[in-house]
Length: 327
Image 1 (cartoon, one colour):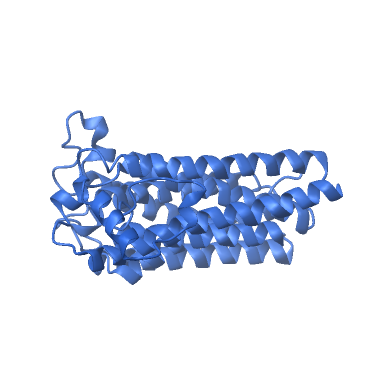
Image 2 (image 1 turned 135 degrees about the vertical axis):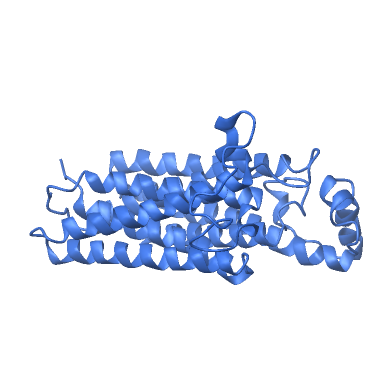
């Protein structure tokens, strides 16, 4: 239950991160103090100092020069909460971990898995600051590569927490003929989510806001226009959105086909429920994705779409655990 709670906190962290990105609040804190950064501004002098620091960087100079100190506060607090929540996750993970070690209630294999998770959590903090640094140099925006890496590492930590937690909590499932294929489905779901990171990192969701057509065509003209062409899935906005659309469609049909084939087999009731949950989650996520696109990334829908990605990953991870080969 401790590991599941930590996974829930990571889920909340991803949602806060999505909200921070969509409100363009992530560059409001231009310094990283891992330990002293938990102290918020306490008086107007503190606010003025932080505002002056922010004003020396590209986002203020090129985009937000109109902001007063009061306006700055509105973007500061969200980034502050985002960073504070990350530190809180570290404490909630580390303190019980040490307690269980002292009590010798963790077996050797699990101990090293949990130690690895703690290291990954620390690296995630470093990755977050590495991402922010990319927006403090020339352009007033973070690198889409670093943002996607930051998001991807969060997903790795989340899946690992769920998997280790399920190993401690759930009974060993019965192997099925399709048990190995579900890992491929999970990989596709994660890959599709990461392609969404590039959409978010380049603001590619704010263009071509029609569905199923894109720029009047199923396959629009002008794809892979970036030079060199192989960089288009990462740099060209039209190609980035096109890739995410079609990966999402592929994911939906792969999950649907997997559900149809697998539930026809002789499965235990909990395995069938896991498959049904995965199908429901992918249907929800597709609906959220289309709604977010048509709304031109309305903030509540954008946040729900990012949360939906983690819900789908949760359901697919649970299904993978239930259908895995115990050997």
